[in-house]
Amino acid sequence: MRYNKIRKMDIADGPGVRVSIFLQGCTFKCPGCFNPETHDFNGGKEFTAETLQQLMQLCAADYVKGLSILGGEPLHPQNIAGTIEIAKTFKQKYPHKSVWVWTGFLYENVVDKTIFNYIDVLVDGQFKQELSSPMLQYRGSSNQRVIDVKASLKAKQVVLWQADL
Image 1 (cartoon, one colour):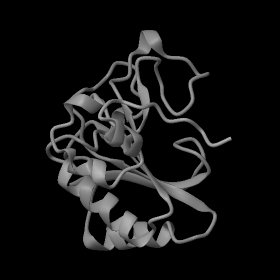
Image 2 (cartoon, helix red, strand yellow):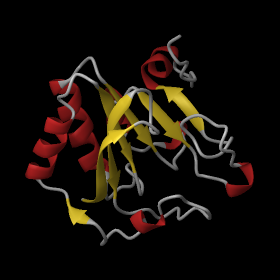
Image 3 (cartoon, helix red, strand yellow):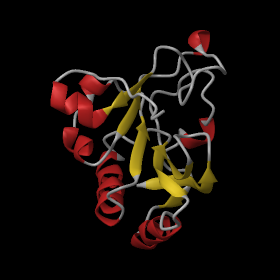
Image 4 (tube, helix red, strand yellow):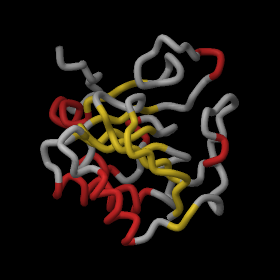
């Protein structure tokens, strides 16, 4: 697996200050994508054990509320095993912090549902430029859903995430 970049302090991709990793490779290539540089599976840098260790160290700070995994496409067959490894390692190390994942796949169509054991929120659906709005929270277009994964698994249907008030 390859990755494009790691943001040490991200306030746009999930609640609070987060660490974000942008994985490399996407076959959706949505028109208007804000990260076209992540589409090439051969771009970016190799994700190694050292990268995982560095990522976990960045998440250790008390002010970091969680980890965000974006792309590219984290749930593409070429990336899903690595995404599971990252999320699982993070949850074992920081069980009280959240993991958010963005994907162009719909929740119902995610092939390897193992990932749901390790993530808290899934933002699903392909970006649609004609449905985009800067007023949307944590998503680029109105067709995308911000899903509470734990509540969805319990209810056996999609439950939308609600911000803690």
